[in-house]
Image (cartoon, rainbow, N blue to C red):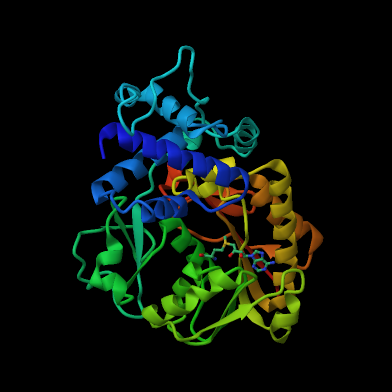
Length: 393
Ligand SMILES: C[S@@+](CC[C@H](N)C(=O)[O-])C[C@H]1O[C@@H](n2cnc3c(N)ncnc32)[C@H](O)[C@@H]1O
């Protein structure tokens, strides 16, 4: 592909990303894979270059751009070489029309910029939300140790005891150690969130919103495969991804439980008042993960944010019914908005006076309300809010 053809391909892809973001369709990553599946003529260098252009253009545009072309012109305002490729050459973008301007640049739609600022995320903190994330691994202690593992590249040890950091784009999935389950890809912040649970061998632990089990696997390792570890979720497809991952990781202790939305307790009844710990890794806006999914900021609207906080309250209430006296809830969101973090745990504690705040003792992060907040700028992790609540005996 010529450089101009790559720009045109990125424009076409951006059109689909914008449409998907507005219609709650697939994420950009998936659209890019699908796009190239139908264009086998594109080589790996072309694919990488187009992908890079797409993500750079997404990062530049704050509000949802009107079109892929407008987004690419906005990127061209920062990188003149791109605008020069709007030359009308075969397969390239048409020349700029007189008066044609790019989409407005910025951090995010204005309402979201304001909501973040209201939660103390502005200036450098806000800008860092759109940085490129490095690649963090967790050494799976069921099969290996950080000091002894032999990996093809050197990783930087991080403060979480099993974490190693590599540059973005490292092809970890090609490594034998990855295929054999010695390492898992997991952001350092997510590893710290798992540490907050302090899951111990022999305990009964419920990962209430387990998804594909990124945190469940870390807890299985912390529990040395001993005890009861339930991975529940309402999303059958996500939960189905956990079984092969658990097998690869040698985490035989995990039991998956598909929940019925709104009637979750029906499947969890046998654990009522019995769990030592419940992790509520609640569905949220994902404002802390824009480094990986920058188009997520075009997907959100205030009504959806309100729905997330209602669900978060409901899930905290559900978790409280599962914990035994002396047990704990760990509440986590990958959001930096207080409405999904400090406010939710405050609301829970206000409505459940028998519970007390039990802030996690983590080696990174800053206190926010009765929890801890990790941010890309301060902690070089994805953004997370992590809180603990304890039920006295
Ligand atoms: C932040 S994601 C979990 C990510 C996962 N814990 C991990 O570490 O990879 C939130 C999950 O909550 C699930 N969820 C949404 N509503 C739920 C409900 N009512 N009960 C349980 N899980 C729910 C979603 O399907 C989604 O998988």
